[in-house]
Image (cartoon, rainbow, N blue to C red; front, side, top):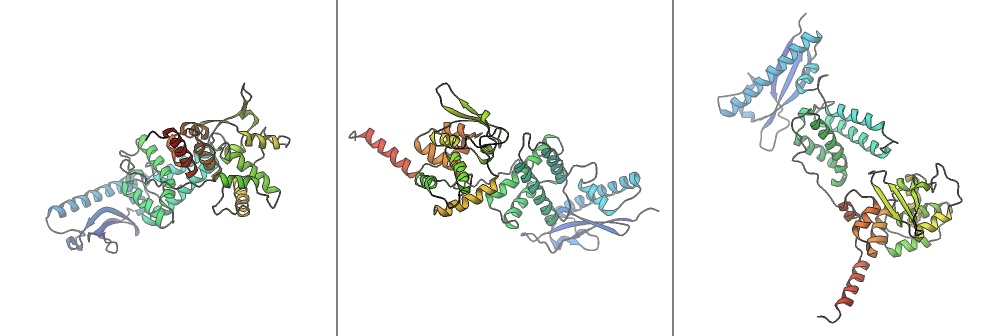
Length: 404
């Protein structure tokens, strides 16, 4: 028996736009099952004819609206007929999804994201890190919630992506999820990557990110100044187990290694030069960029201190996981009476600021030691302290003398 099929258009009056117009919605009915969709049209209620479910009159606006409605009806009917001929079983949802580009032969955003994440997972531990995989998985979950809430659907076709989708997702992250502008960018970048992949593969004709600019918010990076670093190094701690975490943190303060890079540091990464100096030669796990650091006296003392301790996989130290280190550092900060929140990554900031740039080390050299892919990143991390400015001005005063 042939199924009953009907397409109806109506106004969504409970969602008026600022200009007073309301969205035009479509409703597909097949054998009593119903599926709704947006026509991406806005109409003034006074222009709509409730009996014919079309725009009334012969104005240019009415003709344009009715032409679009007729075109949508033709497309939906075509998809309905194709599904009937192919499957012999048709539902309103299958017809709507086919019209929206969400049939089996169409690519959707979340399916592309899931495919990317499955492939990324196989690289974790080889040339990708677990934390990045968790970030992609989190973005996929946030997008799924957003599409379900905003579009009342389980996915969205790639060809339906518009700049408005990106703007609405950014707003959702900052309002519903309570993220800052900077944090929301961390979710928008993976989305941008998915859209770029789709564009490069020819699945969408235009990249909706082409005219969208991520709002960069430069935040102040904390660091330990000279006085705080000295206090941290000399503070008598309450428990002996805290000493090791402090030593690892101080080690990073004097060589700029991130926690993950210090954790995987092996004796093969320690290179002794002809002049007797010891260097760390690694590739940063986060960016896979090379970093070369000549070790100062403090990290050399720490290596010597733990030289007799057994380690696994030829590693230099048995570094605890990041969460444990940060918990201990929080307690150490309390004992040192620091007002700031002490976390492990603060060691990199302190190296870039207090240990190197404030002592006159050129920005390019610091960037190389930190393993940054761009010197702009180093400029964000590094701060010129008031002490450094004072010393530079004293040197300037000495050079100028009585010239003026």
